[in-house]
Amino acid sequence: MGMKQHASDFAIAAYLGESNTASLILNAAVIEFDELGFEKASFASVAKRSGVSKSLVSYHFPTKTMLGCSVLNTAYPSGIFMGSVRHVDSPVAELLYAATSVALHVVHTPLARAAIKLRRELEGNAVGLPCRYSGWTAHAAGLFGEAQRAELIDATVNIGFHSRLVVGTVAGLISVAESTGSFVTLPSDVNEAIRCQLSVMGSIGDLPVPYPEAW
Picture 1 (cartoon, rainbow, N blue to C red):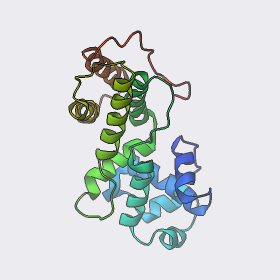
Picture 2 (cartoon, rainbow, N blue to C red):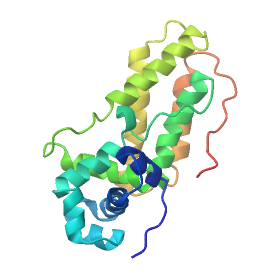
Picture 3 (cartoon, one colour):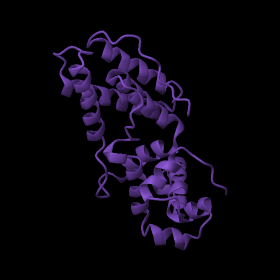
């Protein structure tokens, strides 16, 4: 079975330091965990998808739990789910962009979906898993603080509360999409929800709809 290039490929190569046999295996594991979940995926299915032997898979990743943890950690660069590369100068626009980008990753990127499933299946059974929300909460707080210093939002805004609210909103909408099996409106739902939250903090202006060309 041939390997298809996915957006997760580059994150995996970066996680491993280079594109090699291990990254090929990890890319295959992402697709297997996304499509089958942790329990049904196997070294045999990962080996078949990656085009290497089963023994080579176990050489690089001695246990399936270790393989699952490697995939999960790849999805949390710097402890933040799907990363936090800055796209725009305005901290308010960046917050909207980042939240919508997470939703877009869940819709379009196998790594994001695999990580969500693995988090649910591995939690309590594996050590060293990245914190679920703390990275994004801290990132949102940093952007809110920047916006407050630039007087883009009201000085009385409770940064801690609103950071948790943003992360909770995105996580909740992702959970609803999972439960209903309907992901089509997830990016637009997240975008609209975060816009509503930002609008009560001050004059946010005409924020663009952040749909990256890569999607």
